[in-house]
Structures are given as structure tokens and as C-alpha cells.
Image 1 (spheres, each protein chain N blue to C red):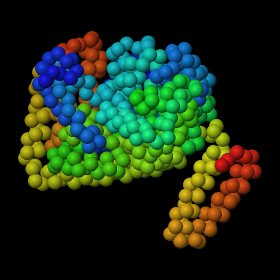
Image 2: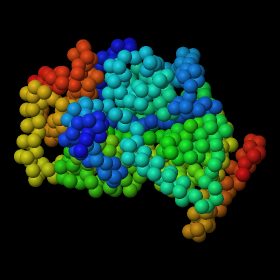
Image 3: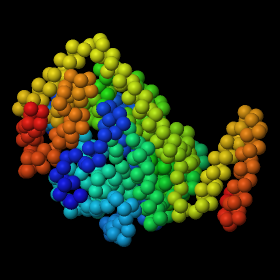
Image 4: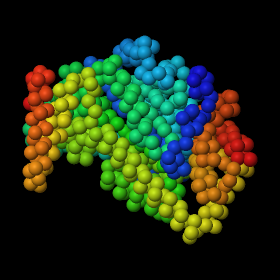
Length: 181
Length: 350
Ligand SMILES: [Zn+2]
Ligand SMILES: [Zn+2]
């Protein structure tokens, strides 16, 4: 077997990496292995390991295949940067902020898979984005709670949450939020 | 910080601090990915546009400082030598990707605890590091910087998707928290595989800092969150903190267990490693990491006295190619580095 890195010398060093439960085998010649060994710890801790990147790419592609036959798979092209949905699937990366708007519908199912069934942001909101966004976020969370409380028939708590929702909605309107929902 | 100390000192100032559980958790890091409105992400951005953003950042930090006691210094990758770049990488102040990206820069605080990579995969990557389990503190610091930046810049943000990032795995909070763990006990008692399995199921990523699967070299592992969307930042911080504390507890158990059942084997292994480090003439970084890991364990178990965990941690940085060359004062090829590494370790551990 030839060395995976230089493709020239015989690979004599073999090892298995387990990342996210997936086995990745590496075969190197002594020289390349030495070099790799020397790079020890200098790799970035935040870059996803290659297999996970592959996993994402696989996910994206299988998604695309799945969508063939259903409604058209999104022939959209981002007006700001020119990225097509096909290119996005291939590289697994967006090219500009507007890509998110362009491919929006196709992204929800993908994000659900990548982020453990989550598809909506519930974290920090930049203050420059406006207070209304923050209020709307609180409303969404409260409405979710309300549903849960009704489901388990905790009507006392549900009533309390409903009042809270009303108060917030009033605030949102008086702030001139206007354009929500 | 004058520009020299950052490239000369293998130990960042913050590393001298002690942190909770730092005998097992070497460090905590958080990173926030942020992008600016109206610009394509760095990979598709022209050099001119990149410079425009970098200049904007430089101006902001010249006009005001976000916080009085943390002055940020800017370095442009195009202006650094290869050696200087590898030093920044070895100190985890920048990623290897940043050093290879044309037109990229970094802002680093004097204590080297806070840095902002400019034009890595995203326009901005704010990151902060602390010793031990201090994920919450690390987040607090990065978030403080983020709070200030958002008053100065227009972030790319979407009400549903949150902070918009180049990679779909970062969207939402843009927050990745991670801890670097030293887990020889779990590895030697063969508990690492099931532990990794459980962690994966819970939405965490575990990987060897360098290594062969779950028997990673040096028994060093990095644990981080995978999910960035649909959770609040504080939930994410709390979850990783709790899970890390659990692992620390298990690791301590495993070490106790080994001491009761395999004391001589353990002691033998540790002192063999010490002997090798003290007398070897050639030393590869892989072997050095494994031996140093044993020394860390030896200090923890009380077999080795007169050395601190902090000192050994420093050696982990020192044995890397960049610092070996800084230490030698000249460039060294791979074979020369093996000699230099062995020399350094012999001297230090004598
Ligand atoms: Zn090779
Ligand atoms: Zn786009």
C-alpha cells in the first residue's frame, strides 16, 4: 500500500482514528508519519475533524437526492454572491449572509439534522438588530411553554404565561414594532 | 506585551494562573463566529474588501478600547515570518487555516487570553481561553468583547437562524465551547470507548488532540459541543461544564482504581517515562507527548515530586517545532528537531 500523503513510498505506519464513532484509517510512510507527528497539537481545536465534514457533505447530498422527485430541489441562485444550491451542497459552506435567505426553505430540514432537531435560534440577539426581535424571541419561547402547560393540563401556569404574553405583545406594539407575524 | 514576548515565551501569561480541576482539565476555550452584513464570507472576498474590514477593525481599536485593561494588538499574517506564524498556532492564538489565508489578521490581548481572528472561515472569530474548567468565565470574556463589537459593527444576523456563519455547523449562536482533558485513567481502564459513545449521543464531539482513536497520544482529548442552534449560550456553557465535571469525577475514580489494583505497573510505567525523557538522545514529538502524559499522571499520584503540573504543561508547548526553533535560535529540520527536543527535555527534567 502506498503512503496516503506522498503517494510515493510504501506505507508502513497505520493507525485508526475514531471520530464521532466513525473509524478513519490513515496509512503513511515513515517520513510523512514523522512530519505528521511533528505537527502534533498544532492543529486547530475548532476545525471539525475531516470525517465530520464528510458526514455533513453526505447529509447534504443525500438530502438533495431525496428531494429529487418532490418539488423542484431549489434551482435558486443567491442574488448577492451567485452561489447556487448545487454548489452549496457540494462544498457544504455558504458564501454570503444572503445565501441563508435564498435557500431558506431547504435549510430547515438540514439544520434539524445538524443541530439535534433544532431549527430556530433562541440565543443572543445583537442590540443593533432592534429590541422588537428580542421581544419576539421571548414571545416565541413563552408560546412554546404555554403549549406545554396546556398539554399537561397545568392551566394555572398556562394562564400566568398567557398574561405575560399579552403584556409583552402590548409592549411590542407600543414600540411600533408593526411588522410582526 | 511587546511584540517580542509573544513570539519568545512558550507560556501565555494566562497559563500561569491556576484553575479549578486543572490537574485533569488543562484548559477551557470558547469561540464566537461572527460575520458582517453586506460582505461575502472571507473565502469569496477580494483582498481589497478584506482590507476594508481589517482597516475598520483597526480603526475601532485605535479610537477606543472595549475595556480598559485589555489592550488588543494587531498582527497581519502576510507580515509575519513562518516561524512567528507557527508560534501563534502552537499557542492556539490562531488556527492553521488563518496562517494560510491571504489577507488575514489577528488581534491579541496583552495577556494572550482573548483573540480575534479576522478572515478565517468567518469575518471574525472571537476566542478566549482559561485554565481548568472555566467555560463560563471564558464565555463571559468573549461575550464582553462581542457586546462591544456589536455597538461598532453591523453583524449578519437573522431572526430565525441567528448569527449567520459560513459553515452550517456554526449557525445560531456561533458558539463553540471546548475543554482539553487529560484522561489516562479512563484510557487505561478501557472506559474511553463507552464514554465517547455516550458523549456523542448527547451531542458532544470528542477527539484526540493527536492520536490513534480513543487511545489518543498523550491521553489528551478535546471535548466540545456540536449543536449551535436552538440552545441559549448559557445552556450550552452549563451543559459542557456539567458534563466535564462528570468526566473529571470518573477520571479520578479510574485513577484511584488503578492505584489500588495496578500500583506497581503504574509506578513502573511512570518512572520508565521519566527515565526516557531524562536520558534519550532523540525524541519525536509523539513519544514526548506520551511520556509527558505519564509525568503528569505521576505528579497527580504523588510519585514524582518537585515538579508542577504547570511546568509539564509548558513543556507540551515547548516541544513543538516552532518553539524548538525559537529556543535554538535557528531553523531546524525534522531530524535536528529530534535532537533539540531531547536536549531540551533532558535539561529541563534533570
Ligand atoms: Zn509518504
Ligand atoms: Zn450568497
